[in-house]
Image (cartoon, rainbow, N blue to C red):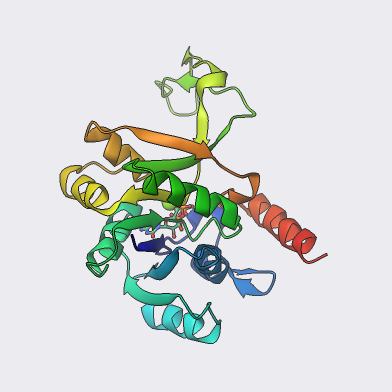
Length: 235
Ligand code: CTP
Ligand code: MG
């Protein structure tokens, strides 16, 4: 079984604020995208990384990957991305050579995921799960709200799901390739993770333990945390 990782990195990073596309922002002096690609290449099972670049940034991303060494065993490809994460992942899948039967999808915005988490996801796919997600229990209680009738008015709470049964889902998510391709061909609506498309096919998605350091860099405070995690690793 050969394993490839698709790394969607085509987002602007609107919530992070103005500046370069999020995946190209520096973390400890190195672009976030390079950290994320290295995190995939750290797994001995991963022999190809397909990076989905900002639509107008494929040449720049290719240059960055040429400049930052990956392990000898790891190849990479760069393709331009699309307008939504889902479209970007689809474009990455389209570029995948036929001889890969396990696919990881990993957000460039999760640069610090540890290799043990990557390996745990791959292992669960190898053991037969069509789709695997790393996930953590929630610290906060979650409320479902009704959008305010008048914008700016307080939103009424309609439900409180039992916290103990909720999980915050991370990446890399791992898939049997055929299952993921079929999910992308079948599911049309815009979703925020790939596993939910597999759920819509009626297949069972399983959870393995995620890791605190696999958090997504989304808002400015996340950059502070990411820099601190990197500094701690360098001690
Ligand atoms: N992504 C992508 N193509 C898009 C949108 C997002 O490849 N059209 C990628 C991002 O680059 C990121 C991952 O999907 O690695 C997760 O998305 P998110 O954290 O939402 O990143 P952005 O969409 O860039 O951020 P924002 O939503 O704040 O603009
Ligand atoms: Mg987004």
